Length: 407
Image (cartoon, rainbow, N blue to C red; front, side):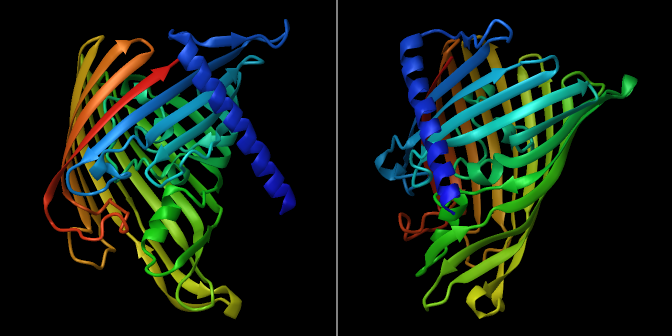
């Protein structure tokens, strides 16, 4: 236990220094180029990149992703990464990351990924360490604001608060691309490891929100495995994909009224299906995502006596289109629906529909600015009952603004 605390302290100190260095570098740089640091004459240089994003959120009826009814700047992301190719077909990469989204994380820097990768050939490669979990179009690149048009991705699928649930795991992965001749090609990734969720992360806050009264205690590390396939079709620019993830014995401990802690535990299979078509200056995307958490509640101090059931079964889909007018300006829109089929309360808390329109301005190669409007119906993704004591089935609006600096 003491070793674990010391390790966590060291990791936190390292990532804090990385983030501070990143911020200073961005403010001083004013360029888009990466920074190379030579370790010795016998090794290639280390390639450094970083980013800093600051957002503003305002909504007219509910507090969403923070205190947005008053307007909030509590929507920040920053990271610093380094990569080196010390030997042929070998890559080592690491990234420190920090973010603040409402009451989630609130500036607790952490190690986002730290991996070593070896590619035997185009057909097979291996990577190990703290890796990104591949799922859908955006899961492995949620932190790369330059890679998308939108400020907020469809939140039922890519929740900005749930990075510790979705982004990575400690383990290993096989990957590669298989040529299919005139039929296109097939890219694959298969992985296994542990997902380590934070006690101040989005999943923990979601569990806390369902306790009235009650106290959230802890969340377990979860053995996880899965894979993703992308079929690159013969039609240039069109690909379709499917991913599957299985969390084995995901669990958490709470204390509700009474002296005994309660442990909830169950398996979580997840599925995601994706399609993307890039044609000229257009990008079209559509995805569907669902998981089904089915478990039980136990009393650990009473021989794991079963006292109830636990479950969650949401489904989300979206369709999006964006158009690049020139190197300075891009516009996009999407429509997404979220449904929670395990929700026992009446609507609007069991659904949330969102129509979004986004404008992106590439002011410099290292500086982008986005402004986005959301017409929303339902409150199924608020997940903050304390800030939203009353919800009703009405339409409401949210404004999201974001600027990102990178090098």
